[in-house]
Image 1 (cartoon, rainbow, N blue to C red):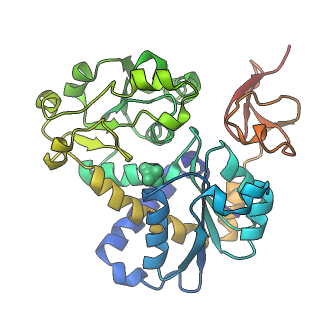
Image 2 (image 1 turned 180 degrees about the vertical axis):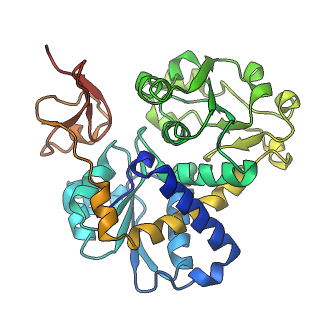
Length: 364
Ligand code: CP
């Protein structure tokens, strides 16, 4: 069964097909009102959510399907120690498709190995959030009409911001996209994203701590929240939390058609006064998320055997040769899981953890 764990699981052609389906749903919603009649979506949310969970549920209901699930770990048997693998196998007996959010990186990947039905990653720790990326892409497409030749600024928590990592990976596949990374020193983009996404794809990018300096050149400004829940040290969070606040004053030097995105929730990083500015697109982005999730549910429930075979990705694997050192990786809490790494660079012996992308290097 094909799942969506990381945005790069889908080709640009498939993403365009999802965008086209979403646009058709917007034009002709009645044509889709019974498209998932008799099907069930399970929303397994081990971490809080407003938009992602409810937009998945609204998406399935608007497709004529139904929804089961839970919205916090404490109301599931995970609180009694049930593993992700067992939970996924159980839910696979009740539902046709799963949307899962989990604080541990790689948890939806583990679920996808055991559920027997498609699993959608609805956010795993600081790793990936591919359906937010689908919402972001549809918003950029509807506002700008293209992904090519855009200068896109990412501002705030670029270290733990999973939506940032996923959107940069998606944009890396379009033509002449320039990336501007705006963050405090402590929250800079992880070096693996720079090395293996930006540099590997030959993308032009710059890093700065100044939103004011960056803003005039941007076609899209992607603001992010400094994520309190990802900090081990709350003193650092308190020091950094108000690093960037977008105000009408700061927008004075921005392009008249710049598009302001934010995955939401916001805390303090966009002044409420900006909401009335024509460049503020973050509530449109919320609605676009529902349409893209409808398109995604349709795609995954209607996948053909050919698609499933095409998706098989065999690379050299190292099983239990390395141990993942990331404390946020699902292997740190689910002790029975094999530590599986995939070879990324044979010349330098670089492997990546299949669950969370932490790198390991083979001894020579
Ligand atoms: N953007 C986003 O993931 O929002 P929620 O945490 O409310 O789902």
